[in-house]
Length: 444
Image (tube, rainbow, N blue to C red; front, side, top):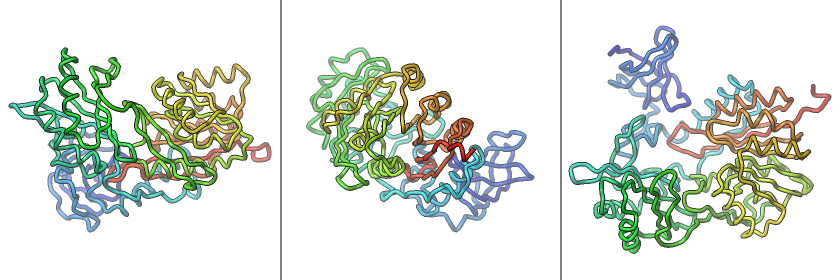
């Protein structure tokens, strides 16, 4: 293995520290700006290489002691060795640099990052991985880039306390499982009131026996209000016992003219992993939308109505489009709970949905989209056909956001402002909300 001496200069999207050796960029995970490290090269290309730390020759003064004893092995966190203020500074720089490099968004349009009030114990959904070997379970998370389970020591530093409280009871549940080699994963989700769901993944052929076993364990699982069995990706969830949905609250007055709202999601449905920062996202969307009550709003990749239902009473009409039928069902339930009567949620592909609206002569004043990490390349090609004055793009990946901004610019939409939000402390991931507006004739 080739070895290099590298001085780390900054952090990169993806989590690695970055240095240069003889003009070649070198990416090294679990390093900090100011580190001097001896690196073993794992992969080399003409212009860059990727390596692993063999020895820290001179540690950076920015380094802090990570609270998790398996940090560096577990694939869940990237930056526990950096102070939270340094994490925020790195994310601000990465976000601004990415939007300029790939989207030509000027730095003056980038607002300061919104920090998380809870840098730890914020995550309200986790997937516990299990591996049965030598008569015992390893319970934890995958090592980065592998399917090797790293056992966590009774709690995860970024998981919600209600989830951590279940770690030992779930290890006991696993220990008594009738077919231990058929138990690969357990998913835990928590509502903002501390109530939790447990989804047990099972790869065997005795679902009735397993259901009976799980029903008998509920009393030993603190806070769990619903238990479900997942027999495979294409198999519907089987409810074993308890509630079918969790909820989170939007308090009165947390954002301008947004009423108190209760939003629910069903077992296996999508919800944001950080409730406090989800409020920050909704607040930004409401501020950027600046609704007058007359607008028609289109919400693409709408999920359970997380953005559009809180906004519905401040606009004339809402149309939500989401491919997941389960999430659309949740959105319709949320309309009933919140007495929203001017919203219509449809289960369909986003591109097909927009094309159908265009074919029907529909027009919208505002389009909100919150696509998956891959972005919305094909969707942003057709959104301009709806003639919206504003587009609000909620993104979890700066690179795909910048790419899609470039596509929208070709249709004369310009970025007005963009705000990064730290939804995922201790990791390199960056959420953001970006406002684009249609250029007027005088602007062209």
